[in-house]
Length: 358
Image (tube, rainbow, N blue to C red; front, side, top):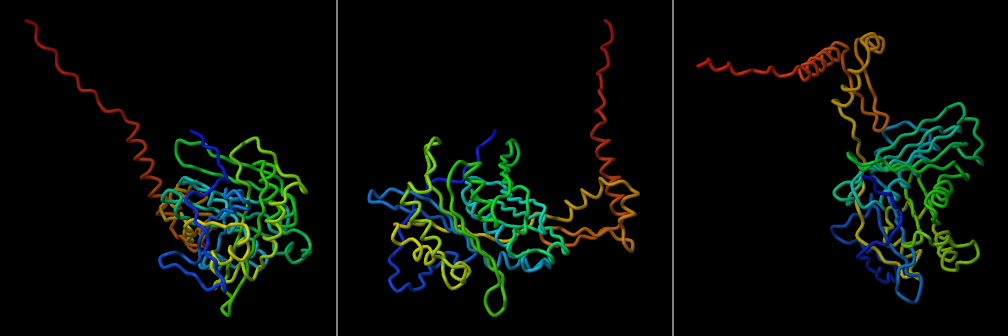
């Protein structure tokens, strides 16, 4: 069964934000204030109907923990932080459990960005992981005015698990930053306009990493709806101008809650929110998974890869190191082969003796 991945739609049960007035910190007990995806709607009209939908991702400990597990140069870490926030924002539109993958591959100094988001408990919580590949020499010579990604492609993949087909959309890299590239994807692949702002950087006296993303798109129940022209949609243009007033400092400010940030941007547009959904860093690697990969290698390769008698495998996502001896892997391979052979041996057929003739 194949279910088309949709990244738009109204969020049910949306409630209006209270008038913040002097903007006190309205933290609600029991609700996360960080590492979250905050869905919202904008009414932007007199009829009280939602015209635009959006999601705001705020990542604190989740992205700080992930990036600190690697030794990426600052520009690479910032770009991966943006990709993680973007991935969380896009995955926040899914209504089912699965794995959402954002992959950007190019010929620039950063050759690969991968952000992986697993939705759990009926898409009520999210687990993120990711990694980057880069070239030190190309990075040192890079012109700051040019994209770190170069030419290549952006791909979004949704895997809903067994008995389903994967959905994948792909477009070429367009623009000088990741936000422009993602906006191009939605216009080309999803046939809808989307406004996206991304931020990532170190904050506070301890230099902790934070990342954020905000995305607004038109609620289009009609698949034949026409895209707005550049000068023909006052509401869309006004909302884009309001989004542009947000600063990177605000996006990454741990003291500024998601609701307060949205109120600052869109209080004139009738902003409404639903309950935020928590995000955490996590990884799906395990000793058994690594072991099962190694047992597929030829015996000669195992010994060639061993260093000081040990095979070490490092997870690209979380930098966890797994260590095995070639002998242990060979023993597991022999056990696996024996188990497979036993499964192929048919059960003996025992025939009842014929009754004696009478």
